Image (cartoon, rainbow, N blue to C red; front, side, top):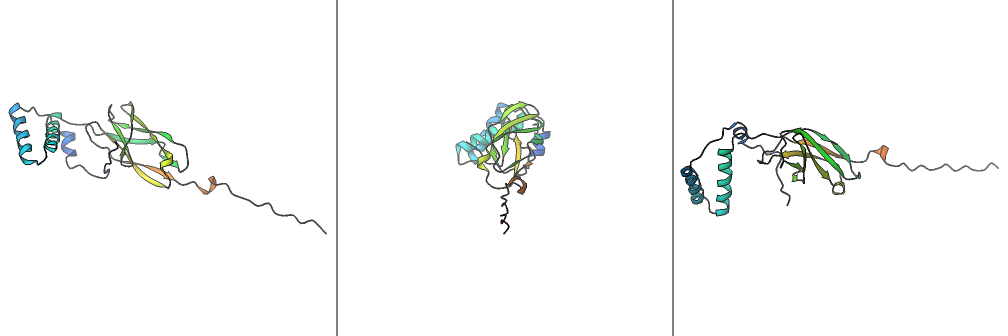
Length: 170
């Protein structure tokens, strides 16, 4: 199931997550964290998710922020065939996901500097500019890079020409 994200959202904790030191938590501290979440949350599933996230943040240390440096191709013409998009950059890990126009796409990890996904061109009917991001396995999003869908230019549209009629001489 595709997850829609808001690529322009700025995570207020990003600076902490990219420069934090891993903390060792005692069993007693883990029990207290869980107890606080159980008491303060009306939903046990939410409390479990919050507990997992908090422990991961505290014990995980710094995370690498993925950086997108180029898209190949960086644009497509409406009506073209579907194609493979190559996203190049740094900080890509196995489990990184390309987020194309706000949708997490099936992603192939080629290397730590390249990811690929397919772009289904029949889905695009009008010119548009969409953000492309990379989401790390830890959930950290890169800054967006734009991909452009353009309309067919006038030089690509066949021009119908009429052959002038030639009147016979009298």
